[in-house]
Length: 589
Image 1 (cartoon, one colour):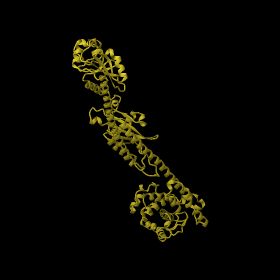
Image 2 (tube, helix red, strand yellow):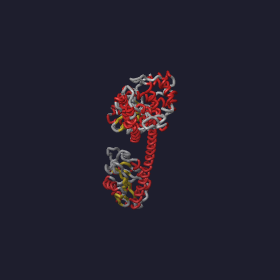
Image 3 (tube, one colour):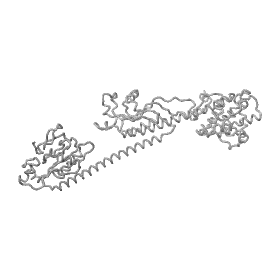
Image 4 (cartoon, helix red, strand yellow):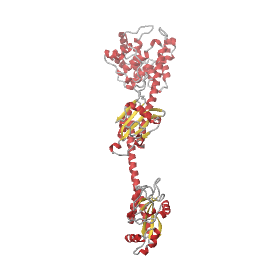
C-alpha cells in the first residue's frame, strides 16, 4: 500500500477514497468541531509536531497534520479504538527509535470516537541502519524516517505520555471554563428575562381590580409585552368580554362580542384571524404553540406574511376567553440571515401574562354573576314588598331615589349613596310579616293594629340579617321610624343617636307617604306638606335633613310624580341630579 508523506496528501471525499497510511479519508471537519480542532492544535504546539485525527469507528481520516510522520494506522485501528474507549493517552506502538502516541479526543452526544495520532523519535539518529527495523514495523521507508528523525527532537516515552496528559487536562479546564462562562451568560440573560417578566407582571397586577376593564388590561398587556419580546406584533383576540360596566346591574347587560387588540405591524388583517386560528387547529385553545420559519416556509402554509408565531390560550380553569399572540421575530430584521427565532423564553413570558389575563377575566365573570344574582335578590325583595301592599306600589323605589337626592345634597360620599339607595329599596321589607288585613285596611288603625304595624322595622332587620352585602343597610331598616325628639320607634332614639342615613330615609319616607295618593285619601298638596316639614324640623325630623329638602325641592317633586325603570345599585353610574327644572325633566323622562 502506498504510504505518502504528509505534505503530499490531502483529505479525500466521504466515499472512503483511500488516503495516506492505508486509512480512508473523509470530508473536512466531518465530526470535527472547533473545540476538538483547538485541542489538536494544542497538542501540535506542545510537541512542536503534527497530529492526525482518525475516526476509529470507520477508519476515516478526519484531520491530517502537515509535515508529519505517520505509520500504518489501518493496522492499529483496533488499538486506537480501545484508547478512545479508555479515555487516556497511550503508546500504541514502540519500536526504537520510533513510537506512536494515540490521544483520545472527548466526544459529546452521538459524536464518533476520535483519536489524535502522532509518531515520535525517541533517541538521536544519524545512520539509516538505526531506523531500518522501526521503518519496517511502521510501514515507512527508512530514508524517509532518517530524514524526518534528524529534523525533530527526540522524546522519552514517559515524557510523551506525561505531556499529552497535561494537554488534555488543560484542554478540559479551558473547555469547562468556556462552558461556565457560557452558563454565566445564559444565567444572566435568563435573570434579565425573568426580571423583565416579573416587572411586566407586577405592572399588570397594579392595574388589577374587579372594576378594571378586561379590554383596557389587555391593551396594556400587548403594549408592555411589545417592550419585552422581540416581535414585530403582539395581538390579543378575545372571543367574549364580560366587563363590569355597571356594578350590580338591575338590567342585564349583553356580553361584548369578539374583540381584537393589536400592537405593532400585524401581518394579518382583522378579518383573517378567525380562519388563521382555525388552521392552527383546536389545540391552540388549550396549549401554547411555537412556529418558526422552518415550518412556515412550507408550501402547505397559507399565510406567507406570518413567518414566526407564538400563540398562548387565555384561560381560567375550563373557561376559555381568547388568544395572546406574537408575530415575526425582529432578530431576522435587525440582523440579516440571522437564525433568531421564538422559543421557550417567549412562550413562558406570554403564558404568564395569559394566565394573569385569564384569572382576571374569570374573576370578572364570577363577580358579574354574583352581582347579577344579588341584584336579582334585591329586585325580588322589592317586588315582594309591592305585591304585599299594592296600594303603596312604587313607594320603595321613590323613597330610595328621594333618599339619594337628599344624601347627595348633604355631601355623602359614594359608598353612603349606594347604601342609602339599597336601604330605601328595602326599608319596608319587614311589612312582608305584617297581617294583610292590617296592612291593606283602608281606614284608621286601632291601637293594637298600629302596634302590630310598628313591628315591621324589627321584622325587616331579622329578614335581612345574615346577608353580608346588606350589613350597612340593617341600621337604616331598623331605625327609619325613629324621631329626632326621641318619640319614634322601635328604640326611641334621640337626635344623633339615630344613624345618619336612617334620619335621611325617615324624611324621604315621610315625604312620599304624605304626598302619595291612598285609596282612602288623596296625596297632600305641596303647600301643606311643606308646612308640616317646616313645623317638624327639630321635632319629628333632623333639621339638617329638612333644610336639604328645601334646597332640592323641585327635584323631590319630580321624583314623586315620575315612575322610572330600576336604576343601577351603583349610584355613581347615575347621571348627576340637575339643577334646573328643564334639566330635571330631561333626566326623568
